Structures are given as structure tokens and as C-alpha cells.
Image 1 (cartoon, rainbow, N blue to C red):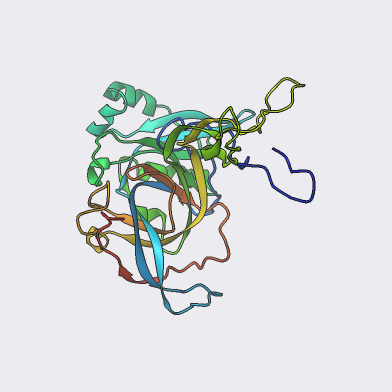
Image 2 (spheres, rainbow, N blue to C red):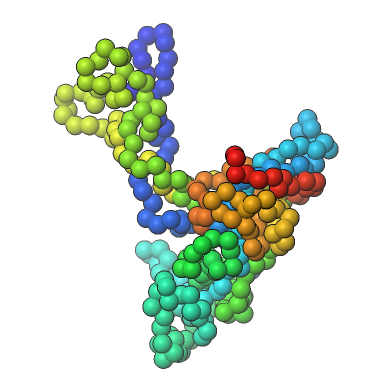
Amino acid sequence: MGHQIGKRHRPRRGSLQYWPRKRAKRPYSRVKTYPDADATSVLGFAGYKVGMTHILAVDNRKNSITKGEEISMPVTVIEAPNLKVMGVRYYKNTTDGLKAITQKLSPSLSKELQRKITLPSSKETKQKEAKELSPESVHEVALIVHTQPKLAGVSKKKPEIFEIPVAGKDTLQKIQFADSILGNEIKVSDVFKPGEQIDIVSVTKGKGFQGSVKRFGVKLLSHKREKGRRKIGSHGAWHPAKIVFQTPMPGQMGYHARTEFNKWLVKIGENPEEINVKGGFLNYGLVKSNFILLKGSVAGPRKRLIRFRKAVRPSGKIPPQPPEVVYVSKASKQGA
């Protein structure tokens, strides 16, 4: 699997950049890293992948040869209904990392949460809220939010629950900000603005158990080989008698947690009629609530929850202003 000896040069088959190639634990990923920010604000959001279409926009990239001209741009549509803040969780720094001190739940929780968790009684909620916190003992504040799929075009009722941290330099301001929106809803326009770069964290399409040829792209063996063609030529040396992890073996392909950096947020819309195609999007239907348009593709199948955050390492090549959208294709995608 290493480089060939001689004049011919062939790199190894398959990338080791993503390892291990194992299944994700759940259909929506856990975001492990968030950027730092001085202003007190929410750092992330989530939405359901709808599909793709194309737009005509005025190119505003500084060094582009088509600057000022109308260009066709592929975009991914993500429906982003409001998230509801069901609780606040407080953390402190320890020698073992961040540890949760306590949490505060909203007094009025949605009934849809019964499909996901066992709702606490009013007595349990009051007991947890009775504990007072001092800003000195709190280092990080996170919002416990849940989605509202009933407001979107997906045919599901069970919400997803996850955390989104609150950014800011002053801990007291973060605590006050989290308390002020407890029990309320967050819009995608409250977190992001058009033209901003965001990171996408999602789970890719699952392809199941696949062989070496499809999984790693190894070369087919000779048709004269007795033991088959869609295999690797050698599993390794006889001694030491073991198979190293770099060997391209069959296994799970797809359904992996992946992160895409610096996706360009082209548009944030509140009127679904601006983008709904004739007959609805393939395998999704009609968009019913707020949506965003991202340049390019996004990992994962339709209807899957896509989480996104503010860019950790934004690129200087992407302009901070969104392009002027001239036209959005509403042609039917049924034949695509």
C-alpha cells in the first residue's frame, strides 16, 4: 500500500484523513468546538436539509474574472424553523475540563418533548431552580434548545435536543442573557446575517457495509486471478503476523460525522414562496418556515438535521457582503 519502487509513482489508495471510519452515534452531530466572541450572543443554530437549486447572482468576489456580472450559483436550501430554549446549563472549569454545575429548565415545556424525554414535574423544576449561582463559580453558559419539526416540511413530530453555548467575555452578562431568553424562541436571523461564513456539522449519507474497491478506490486485480478481482492484493507481511490499520479493508461506508468549513451564507429568507419549486422539493415537499441558502453542497440526505455554527477559521477570500440575488430557480426537480 506504500509507494511503488521504481520510476512510477503511485500514492496509497484511500485517504487516512478521516479515521476511524465508523458510524455516527446519532443522525445529528455534536459540535465540539465553537469560536470565541466578545459580544454576548448565541453561537449556533440548526435546520433541516431540503435539497439543492440554483440562483443567478451578481458576482461580488474581489479577484473574480466575472466580478460585476451575473453568474449561476448552486445553492443548498436548509429550512430553519425557530429553536425553542427549554433550559440553561451552567459549567465550571476543573482539572478534568468543563463540568456541569446545575441547570435551569423553563416552567412551560412543550408537549412535543414527551416524545423524546420524560418531562420533570413542577416540584422537580422548582428544586433545581432553588439553587442560586454566583458568577464567580460559573465559567461557561449553554442553552438547551429543541427543534420544532412541526413548523417545517418534514413529516416528523419528535424534536431533537442539543446545546448551544453563549459567547461573551463577562460571565454575568451571559447568565442574564440566557435567563432573558429562557422559554422563548430563537430565529436564525438573530444568530447569523447574510454574507457570513458558517461551518456545517452533519452526518453524511449512509451506504452500509462496502468492499475495498468502493470504500477506498483500490485497483481491480487481474481477471486471471483465481480468488477474485474486487479485493486487495495483500493484507501485509507474514511477520509480524498482524494487519496494520492502514490496510484498506471492507467495512462501514457513509453515515459519518463530518464538518465543512466556511460555507457562504447567501440568503436568509422568511417567505418560503421565494424558493418553493413546482411540486415541492424532491423527497422533501414544500418549505413552510424560515430558510437559508448556502453556496455549494452540504453533506447528508434530505430531511436530516444540519447543525451550523459561526466560522472557526473564516477565509479571507470570501467577501463579507452577500451577493445580489437576481433569480431563484423554481423549476421542478423531479427529473433531476
